[in-house]
Length: 154
Image 1 (cartoon, helix red, strand yellow):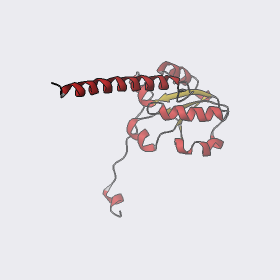
Image 2: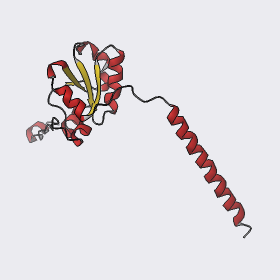
Image 3: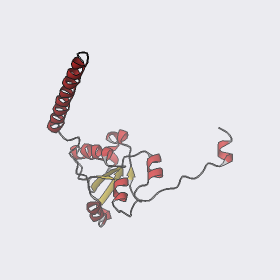
Image 4: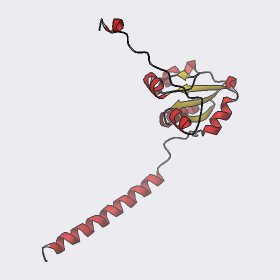
């Protein structure tokens, strides 16, 4: 029996220590600033913005293969997030901008960058989130199969 007492005490100490570490991590996470200042647009908010398309610009920051496989909005400006800052000169400042990615994570970062550069940003949206919430503007673009002739030289 004596052999088990130190082991039980060690396990008890370890669980208390791990519990304190978890509580400390929760406190630190609560004290950290949010990852983005961008407003995450709901389906209804995005639908309302779609009612005035002449005032709106969607910037999709995903890779082209993501747009073709996951889906996207029918009309958008495609600028991958890694190229956004270099391409600011192509973005009109007279439109309300919505940035788009799959679930709005990259879109929120892009929205923050654009807002910091003086653009009028309504917020960030996720194409998959929008569709999951019942949005009907999302379309999938079929990727044509490679023909045997186009792959023969490779």
